[in-house]
Length: 307
Image (cartoon, rainbow, N blue to C red; front, side):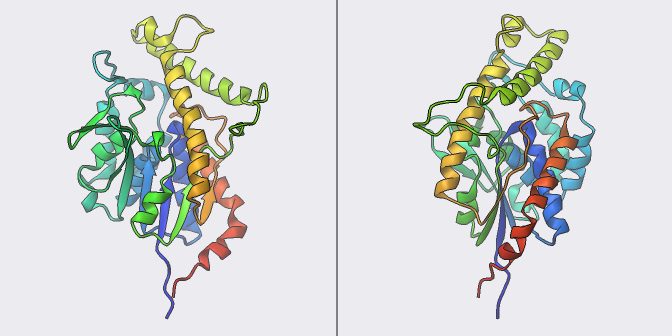
């Protein structure tokens, strides 16, 4: 007797580009590929938790309707804690989309990756509050305040494991589909000289996005320190998120080389800025197209039958 192998989704981090995970999941399901478990890092944990709860259509409807004003409205600012954004507003909104409080109550096994701020260790969150797990996994250092969990401060899981293939394997997955939001970026190898203007498109997209959001925050009364000195200088959002983004690209390359998935899906989302959460429709479409590009590989993937 042959049985279908256990399939897991490993959804990577990438801020607003992570809405493409929705398109990937929808396109895979249209092709008859259903995940038995979901693991996510950062935005991948956010989308993955909604899918594990059976609430992905509700999340998709909400993000498709997001506007710039909504994004800015969710930024509950604080300058007295370990970040400039508390995140309570947005995660309270997300709580309504998960419909369950505990990871153990989700329809699919689920795990989120976070980073222990005290010792740098990778933390796998597989039980307890869904919202707190997602919030910890998505807490970009310096921007979102860290989450206190079991005696430790946790921050974004992308610092250690941007695409959590290893967590999927540890949870018993026999076949892993990984979605990498950084794979399309061309970055120099460790000993390879950088090529001038190689990342101009990426930087312009990100800076334009960050400047627009900080400009809108200026209109709501945010101090210039948050925005930056002048139009030519990067703001706090640009420096922190852009730096983490670069680091995650390199970590993702290394981890996926050592822990390759059975199928790698790479949405082309370079032109979507990290804070462009209002561009969900474009990101979701990019996820659908990414699955279309691997259609020829799906029969071979589905033949991974375990006896």
